[in-house]
View (cartoon, rainbow, N blue to C red):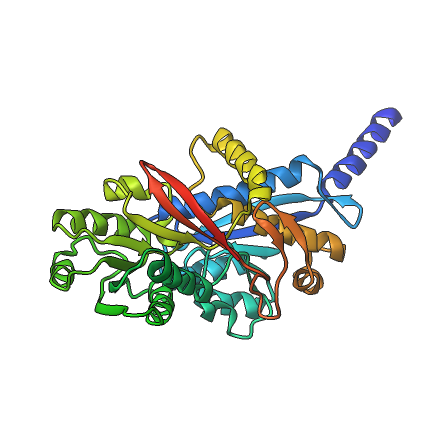
Amino acid sequence: MQSKTIIAAIAVVFAGAASAQEVVRIGYAGPLSGQSAHLGKDTQSGVRLAVEDLNAKGFKINGKPVKFEMVAEDDAGDPKQGTAAAQKLVDTKVNGVVGHHNSGTSIPASKIYFDAGIPQISASATSPVYTNQGFNTTFRVVANDNKLGSSLGKYATQKLGAKRIAVIDDRTAYGQGVAAEFVKEAKKGAGVQIVDKQFTTDKATDFNAILTAIRAKNPDLVFFGGMDSVGGPLLRQMKALGIKAKLMGGDGLCTEAMPKLAGGADDVVCAEAGGVTPEQEKKLVDFATRFKKRYGYEVQIYAPYAYDAVMTMAHAMANAKSADPAKYLPYLKQVKYDGISGVIAFDAKGDIKDGALTLFGFKGDKKARIEVVK
């Protein structure tokens, strides 16, 4: 009887030790439903893969193995739903957040995380407003629209020789922001005219009226600020109306889904807010291979950056010897992490230092890299 009591006591001790393992919750918020769900799920999968890798290697904080968990919330790409999703993650007491996906959701959500003192790293939000609010909890691992739009403006006028440019945006924070930066830079080109400016919405499907107006201006390039779910059908209708201009856009058009959505994207030039130089190429290829094996589909665009965001957060926690947001936040500001997408370090605003971007075209149904711009 006594031996049974001893065994039971030992079991309780071991059970208590097992249950004492610290759980680190990484929140993810993005569009898991709606038109951009394929992009939101891509980013979510990057977060999940990082969490699985950290657990597989027995990642330690302050000498003790911890268990990472992902907590995901769907914001549907809608600002109101985005703030609701952010509040849910705060109420769940997550240790950090990767997200949101869109600038329009990341910006209002960032105030909620700031008030709660929870670090937020976006793997895809590019609006300068996001990091210009003075919130010390706000970070991103990709270049912002200032660089994205201006680089596209230079390429359009200096390399493609565009002279007559029409501009369309979807009225979102991202779409308007990248279009504005593109126009600012494109206007510097000799003899360049912005022949028309039109706008649509991020849920539109019929572009006949605006494209008919644009066709009358005979542009040689159309710039679209928005996502592939709108840009794809837009390009289909451009072709149907006989508009032979190239279509240019930011990272929202730079997805593996774009050729299918557009019925062919050989006339598209886009830029991805991130850049992998040739010496880092193997890391990205290896990641893409593992990703497809794990999920059964190709990386769309943001998964590697989401993966790096989680790893950067974990690296800061290890340096701080704590997953407490208040304790590891100062270390996140000083972090230097060699990730899949390059070395990640942040400036005083939370923008990535020396942020790169990559210009792409399409050949058949695959993206083809043109060049990396630092």
